[in-house]
Each structure stands twice: as structure tokens, then as C-alpha cells.
Length: 258
Image (cartoon, rainbow, N blue to C red):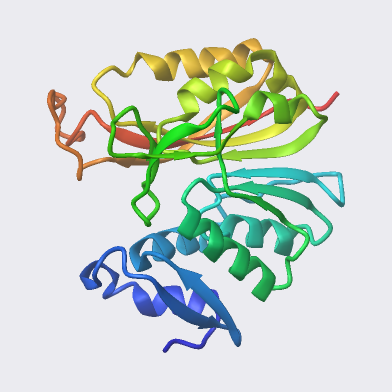
């Protein structure tokens, strides 16, 4: 069992993580504390990005920023935010019940008991939604009949409750419908980090998503682009640099302070 710091464990896993079986839950001892995971591959990539590359780092003048962690998985992002801003008020949402339990256990183990964790999917309404659990980081809302009905929370209603210092949104494709539904309520968000999953043949929604942010007076940059070479490609681009037309990109958006 590995018992070192998070970054030391991530470094040790790097050469062999691709060979580990997928979706096998386990426990790591991180600085003497138990950290539970549902998929070692997902843990590795998230810990490398969040703690190694500091993908979610942001500057706030508020010592106790209000943060929404949507798609919390096992809680690594919330743990990072609490490390960065110990007085932060964090509300985390995770639709996969097993991962939500891991998230709760991890946050308690690492002293972040004040993070509010909801077993729910953020969505466009609060009437429940069909969710396909995978126990890794690719669980998603689905129209298929093989999903499970889970509780949903309308994100727009949450934003309407008051100012949000950071909205982090990693919801495996549901971001298009969610942000469209939020509309003008996004003006209550100071900073936004959204992982955009361009995995379907029709890519026009990305333009709509960015236009929506522009309409709500956000400035934004795109970063952390990954070509989704693991997805089947129906229309490969005619460019040597591009192996597929499908990709994941992170949008970093903010409202400029006056």
C-alpha cells in the first residue's frame, strides 16, 4: 500500500497506471490518511491535473469564497479548494452514489467536514434524471434505459441563491444543456471552470456555449485540450496534426472586476 504524499503517489503510479485494471475500488494512504477511490486511472489523472498542474487554481479577494464543485467525483477538487482557501464555503454535487460516498469519506478524513456534499446531478430541473454510472470519471446523464434515476438539482436555482466565487463544472457532456438553462443566472458567477466534452458528431453546441458566456459578459480562454483518440471517429479531420474530431477542452471564464 502506498503511504506517501499525493504528488509522490502520483509520480510512483505514472509508469504503470495504464496497466492497472479499471474500475476497481481501493484505498491509498496519503500522508497517513485514507483516501478511497473507485478507479485508479481516474484518480491518477485527476490528482496530476488538480494538485500537480494546479488546473483549478484561481485568485480570489474573498478569504472565504463560495465554490460549487459540480461533478465532484471522489472529492479531489474540493480538497484542493480547501487547501487553497481553508475558509471556503463549498457545496459539492456527485450523481454516482458510490463515488459520493467516497467523496464524503475522503473529505472527512482530510479534515474538510464542512463541505456540503449532495448525492445529486446538477441539471436543468429538480425532477430527477437518468444517470449511467461507470464508477470512474465518465458517468453521465443519459436518455438510454440502462441508466438509473437519480436526484437532480437545477443549477440555475442554486446560482440564483447568491453570488458564487467559483463554479467548477465537470459533468461529462451535460454542460451544454445546463449552462444554456442557467442563462442570465450565470451573472451571479465570478469565475467559471467548465470541462467541455466535444464527443458527439454535431460540434455546433460549443459555439453556442461560448456565445452564451459572451452574452453574460464573461471573458474566457481555452486550455488543457485533449484529442479524444479513445473515441470512435466517424469523420476524421483531413489534418496531420488532428487524429480525431472529438476532444475535451477546459474553458476558464471570469467576470472582469471593475
